[in-house]
Image (tube, rainbow, N blue to C red; front, side, top):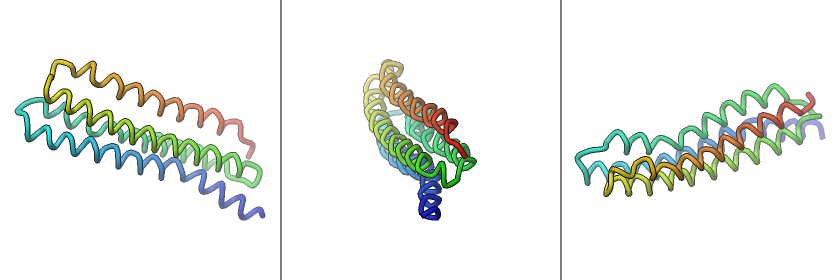
Length: 148
């Protein structure tokens, strides 16, 4: 039983990186496709399009930091908590990255037509980033309460 709990703990340790990377890849790919299309349709704002297409990459960074934080806690006592914190925060990072990428697509398409609304169009993108930061911070706080 102890080895099974240790296995779950290690799944929980790696889950934020794995799920965060999946979400970041999908989010950046969606936004990147929109950016490439916008580059073909316009003669300006290239930096804005490319900048928006990489925004979902932050979620894998949050996952990496969580992984390093969680791995210091691995023990049979903390295994269940590590599994829950890691998997649930990883799923949340995946979902936020995916939807942030979709919002970046919308922002790129809007900026392509009306460049002057850049600031307004990235507001929803920033709000989704905030949700990812909340997940990151709360996972760090909860991991600090695990007993090793």
